Length: 357
Ligand code: ATP
Ligand code: MG
Ligand code: MG
Ligand code: MG
Image (tube, rainbow, N blue to C red; front, side):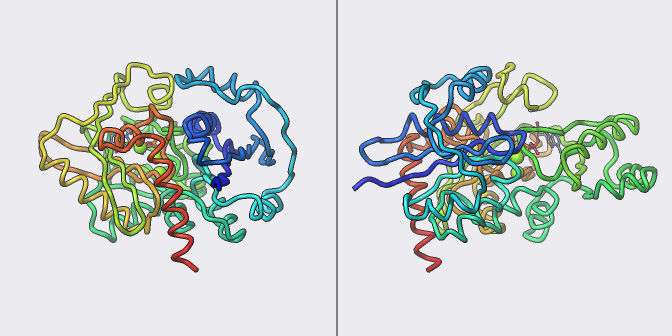
């Protein structure tokens, strides 16, 4: 009999539209002889809707230049189910496994994972702890430091601290890191709220922007480097993909560059020495294990070519997952197709669920 797969997508975060694209791609690509799919849409206001994607959602996805098909374009036979906890309890009888393809807060951060744990349903991807640690760049960096992973210098701070004593915060950043530096909300993705600061005035503006998205903030030393990314697949036995490179035409790989395709090029595999890919694969596995990852992660690195130094930047436990996103393409190059990747992720979800019993 078929595997009943729930796809939870959308969500309250600023990466809502990215999630729609991923969900549509998964629904289109999946083997319909093997799976029965139940799409579950988490609307911007946080309410859950069972049923197919609506025209309006597709339209917003179109505006992001979805290059993939639009199979389930029509029906709006959705049924409103108000609060998260209620539907999942019922879904437990209706579904064998859930693929939560929500990026960012309330999706990639352990909250939905906790809900699915409570409902006792297997789900694709990282568990509660890995999701939470992977989402919060400040906590993630603390864990990386503890695991002796090479990374750029950073300072973590609370919004309230900056509001209370801005001058002291600027002085600390200037002594510890200097300019230019990168300012980020701790819990975000797709470069939302991130900016580069070259002086105190820009630092103030950058912190103000980041503080709109999160109460936890991270400031990092700027590193002039090539951006390399690798995929990890597995629970305890890990498989790494080839290494890919992001070549952004803009000053950095920001939201526009990521989703409007503004001159960004993905080079797969990256044109780098074998020893650098091996080093990245080794560091990626260590980072994945350090956060207790499972299912999948895309791990981002910086390679300072002049000094031949590799730094880990971050782990993304629910990376962009359309057939044209980096993670699936990295595994495609390693010989695992998009639909096989989905099959493997579902299998890993079931295995982890078994192992916990
Ligand atoms: P995503 O999850 O979409 O990969 P994100 O929002 O989690 O992105 P980061 O990957 O941390 O954000 O940073 C976004 C981009 O900003 C990087 O891809 C890189 O181009 C640039 N960047 C971030 N930190 C630094 C740094 N310390 N030095 C130089 N460039 C940086
Ligand atoms: Mg990220
Ligand atoms: Mg990144
Ligand atoms: Mg992250």
